[in-house]
Length: 124
Image (cartoon, rainbow, N blue to C red; front, side):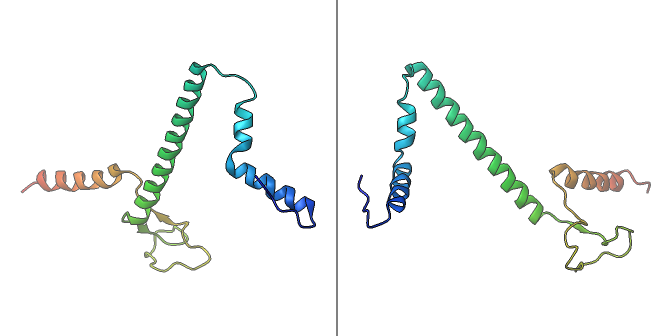
């Protein structure tokens, strides 16, 4: 690996360090400091894969939660929460503190069940 040194050796060292980090030289040095048995290597590899899988799931859940909140039918209450008329355009300074969105499917299913049971069990 070569780095051009014009007149600033500090800059050249910084560039060399960046290139070595990018190439994975430091990671390789750390890995080769001591011997790991093949069984330990496999275990570490599995643990890393599990860590990556959990991280991917966590990100997917967060993305789904954001998507559900942004597309869910929501209720816009008053800014003061006094139960007055609903406001479509809240003041810009206090924008989203009064918006509530259902986070689970059960919040959308229960009212529908209640309406159906009221419809079919109503006296004629």
